[in-house]
Each structure stands twice: as C-alpha cells, then as structure tokens.
Figure: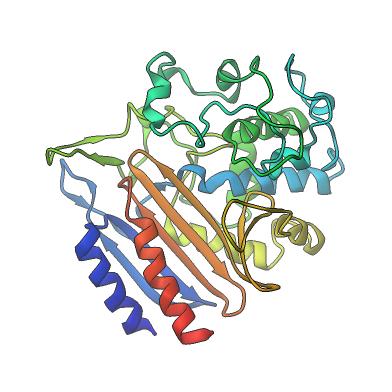
Length: 343
C-alpha cells in the first residue's frame, strides 16, 4: 500500500502544487512521509517533517480535550450552563446554553465568522485590526451583544464563537491562560514537543509561513489575514509527528480516562453531510453503524489541514499545508487507497 499511496500523492501533487508535509502511519509503521514546497519562499527554505504548520480549526480538538479534563477533574460538568461558568454578560443569549451545546455547535449563538453567510475571513480584520487579537476576550465584542441565530439545540451550526467561549471557560475554571493550559496539559502529556500557540510577529524556527496565491501569479503571506495569535477556536502550530502523537495519546487514554475519551469521541449530532457526525471537537464519519474515521480539519487563508484516525485499520494520517488549498485533495487520495486496501 505504501507504493500505491506514494503514486497517488505524486499524481495529485503535480495537479494541485501541494506545499506541506504528509505522514501516514499504521500503528508504529510509517507508510508514507513526504514534504513538498517551501516553508519560506523568499529564503527558499524547504518544508520538512520537522516544519511547524498552522492548523486553523483543527485545534478545536485541543479545546474539547481541555474541557473534558476539567469535567473529569470535577471543576465543570457538560450540563453546566454558560451563565454559571463564565463571568461575562451576554444580554441576548438563551439562559439554557450548556457546555455540551457549545462543544457540539448546537448552542444557537451568533458567530463572529459565520461560514453559512461569510466567505472571506480576511474581511473581519478591516475594522478589527488582527494585530490586536492576542487574547480570547478580544473576540467578545465581535458577537457578545448580538441576538441568537437559532434556538438552543435546534441543529448543528459550526460556530467559532462557541469555541472562544469554551476557551474562556477553560481559563476561568483552571485559573490559567488558555494557551498555557493546553501546552502544559495536552502538548507535554502527548509528547507534542514542537507544537504551540505562536504569535505571527514572534515565530520560532522551523515554522512555515502561510501563503495565499493570487490570480495574477503573485503571492502574499497570511500575516495580515489572521489574528496575530491563535486560541481556542483555531490557530495552533504543530508538526505532522506531533499530530500522530496526539491520536496515539487519545487512543491510549493518556490525556483522559477511557470513560472521558469515549465521551469525547461519541457522535452526538448529525452534521450537514451524509454519514457525518460531530463529537466533542472532532468530526466522525460512519458507515452504517460502524465508525469509519475520526477526523479534524482546518482552513484559513494560507492554511489547509486534515488529519484522521481510522479505527478499523489503526491508520493515522496527517496532511499539513501552508497554502489555502491542497490538504483535502491529498487526504482523499490517501483515503481512497485505504478503503481500497482495507474494506
């Protein structure tokens, strides 16, 4: 299967000009490990397995793990109401919103970037300078006083603002800054030694710049297209090996007990796609009554990311790209080969 995956990736890379790193492992065996393109185009520094990539919304999983840890530790419950665990006023929000609703995108609250009605994430920063967005509370004015979009529990509505609130809940319950909590209680425990929430104006070595390719053949970086520092709804940086370590840590109950790992990975709500469900911070795809994969994804200007764990085969895949597109195409080729060989 290794050579078949390699051939598929080579063919799609030539079509989409993929830039980034790819890792596919079956248990501890590496099936494919590849890198393409440049982490820094100006200096011609190539991407490698050690390159740190932004993963946009892929890190909602980290936020959900943090909440589950705090519930496991008795500091919260999934049924705790928003107004009882966060000292912030939301004058138009329903009083029945719980942590469970926020985790599963069913709270019905307005989003600061509503993907159902907005296309361009960069538009947000025209009136709200991205270089000022360094803390979770900086996002509150973007949605805090708006009316509810839906009734609580009405349906799945992918919502970044809900995960901002979850991050603030982590801060209040743990008495630590959100990013510090994640780095101490998830990254360290999962041996994600290269991962972190880095600021665009203070990036460590081996970090890829995100690139936006323009129609005229030119390009720009994404430093003026995203908040200067990521948080609980997105924006962490990882390596492909670190992400595999996270899946392994979840699978081995190193971050949560078996009971709470199972709660994290339970398909609570059907999403907008056939056979697709959402757990706590993780997408779940089922074939009939069997889970086909657990997966996370992230898209921002200059970022595309997909990672999945296929429980039937114990295969883990990670595709990190420092371009706005490409990760999905590579993921599909890898997945089609996994299905062909294993199902």
